[in-house]
Image (cartoon, rainbow, N blue to C red; front, side, top):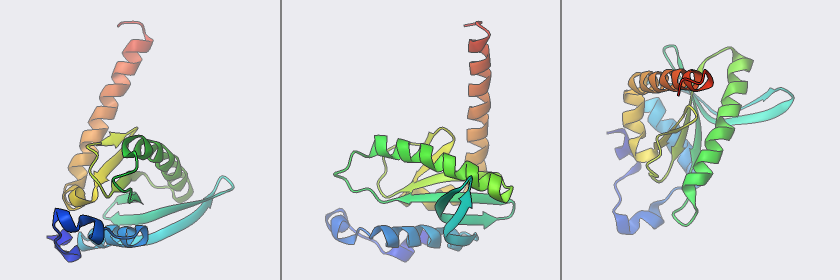
Length: 163
């Protein structure tokens, strides 16, 4: 398994083994590279007169994945923070897409599993599930595309006053 690269650890040792935010970004990049992605690390670009940074830009075939790695500890209220960060990341990804003429897959990789799946089209993937996510990426992208299409239909129906 790819995650075996980073060693096994028991729950008691978890606090001692948590990576720094820099190490966490590096580990996230390493998982993608092991899955066959080429990566740009800590990619800085300027769009709309602002400086933006993406932690990991990963390319494989015709797919570009833009990752923001978040290593929040257990003491921090994470769900609302992750949701807010997902909205910010979506805005960065939109600027990246315009600047580089791509259609990317926005992803937040979190250190701790908060049971969040997505926020506004941005995938939220716990680090311990990242390997599965990248292996089955196309399936996840298809699933969210179907959900977005369904939501769009429901929104249109609601706007037309049918419900």
